[in-house]
Length: 208
Image 1 (cartoon, rainbow, N blue to C red):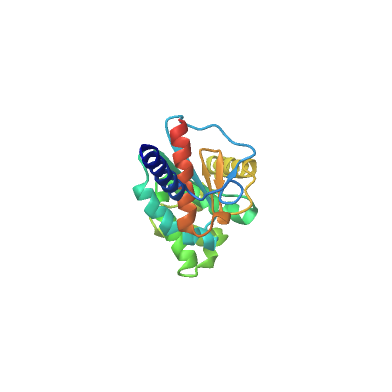
Image 2: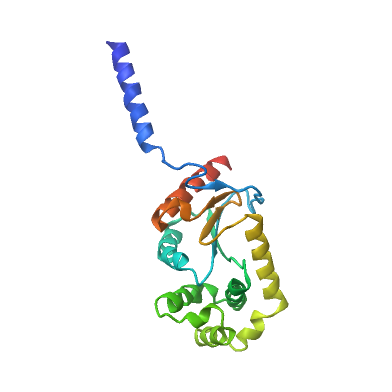
């Protein structure tokens, strides 16, 4: 009788464990990067989003990522990185880093996405004059286009492009966890992408 009770408890625990286990698979829901980078802080977990302002999928991820960032664990850092993988994407990357230097990137980031995808202001994708007017109107200050072409901004853009190439990114949005795991459109809709991200955060945090 005792043996039967023990076996029953073991079976219940095993079934509960199977049901609780995430159905996320390497090669399907995420990839291990072939050229990982070192973690900037061994005590923290970094989530880096590679984006392009002209990407509709990045726009759809935006509200989900915003909500996630407000609820993420305190030991998780979110880093936004424009994926300057071609000349057209590079212009918006310059705008992002110029806004970062001016201290307004966080304020204007969502506005930029909404202006392009909701208001259909497609000139903001690669028109420097239109970008200059938009950012100045949103509090980035004067001579914004000059800052976009400064050596410090171009250096940041080149570093972002080099990192995207190191990770062999094929598109955006791409989420890289601790420079080791990649989550992209293969994982499914934005909400599911963030579920995979949370799963990988758990793996990394337990391994710290």
